[in-house]
Amino acid sequence: MPFTVPEPYCWDDSFMTFYDQVDNEHKGLFQIIFDVAINPICSETLKKCLDLMVAHFTYEQGVMIRANYHGFPAHKAAHDEFIGKLSRLTAPVNSDDVDFCKDWLVQHVKNFDFDYRGKL
Ligand code: FEO
Image (cartoon, rainbow, N blue to C red; front, side, top):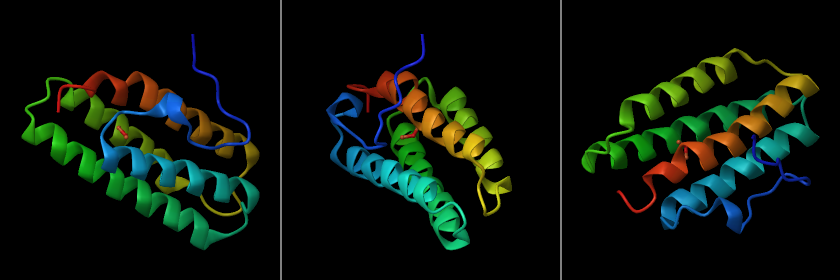
């Protein structure tokens, strides 16, 4: 059963991992996807979205590696697959692709990121 995508699209307490930097970065990811949704013609916003995702995934993967987290390979593969799709998008971003990004982040945080809670 997929998790509900918030509308308006915004981070809320149901997405808490209880790691401050991760939660703060997640808030930024929700915000930048929201920004793409309201301004899909802006290539700079789309580029910033990609940059923030890459930066977040790099940070999160580093923490997982240092903690010898068992779920790292599958988690990294999920990150890499999403970056592959995101990096192929171009402005104007169509609404199906915006919806895909919105849903992906919601499902990823609650299905993948939540698994490392208390283990890093
Ligand atoms: Fe917070 Fe796995 O992205």
